[in-house]
Image (cartoon, rainbow, N blue to C red; front, side, top):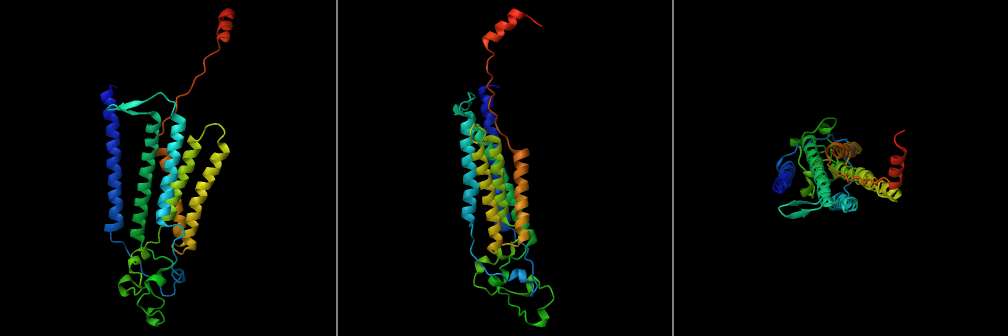
Amino acid sequence: MSREEISMHILRKFVLDCFCISALVVLIYVTWDVWIPFERGFFCGDESLMFPYRNDTVTTPVLRLYGLALPILAFLICEWVLLRNEDDTQRCFNIPLPMWLRGFYSVLACFGFGTCFIELTTNIAKNVIGRPRPHFFDLCRPSVNCSDPAWQHRYIERNEYTCTGNFTEKFNDMHMSFLSGHSAWSAYTMVYLALYLEKRMVWRGTRVIRHVLQFSAVMLSWFTALSRVSDYKHHWSDVLAGYFLGLTFAVLVWTWGTDILQPKKKHSPVPLHEVSHHQVDGPA
């Protein structure tokens, strides 16, 4: 391929990736801010909805920060260490693109697609299921009198009550318990990071460090998932479903959706004395 063809190929791939990511971001916005979610009703005696409201142990900004910063930092370091000495620089309209930079972009793009997939899948589940969170009664304080026999032992539809609580800004979020977005996001990002380190952190003397980093990443996601139960943000089944979803997406995206650049194998030359030996002795 000529330089112009290589440049156009690289530019076309970059533009296509940006277009697909942008389309997914728009869909995420639609499912989060435009789609009117289903709101499930409740039973007056449902003790699983009577937990007190608590603040998040792992807040959403912290979740996004470690879920993006740790993998991106690992991608950058590993690709640079593995590919920095590779003499395979390509140019895109006279802009040099070393192999380590192309390798970093390839992994980052695949990882980015996976984060959009997990976010979109989570939003769809929350909107369709509409399950009340464990602190539903504490926040909503429904207008029905549950001590009245007329409201007992029957399902109360959403149009049969109004919320009288003070936290009006959280009323929509009260019905988004299934499935746990924190659990899905943390499982995807950290399990993907662990799989990436297993494949790319291969230089000498890093085996123990690699395993420690992998264990730390998985335990960080595990702690995040468990905190959603202890904070009364989700039922245990919501967390289990979210974590399984994130784990599944991480394995699928890494196994079948991630492109990585392999360093060229360095072949050691055959010693000259062995060549001379074979030439003197002749074939056996």
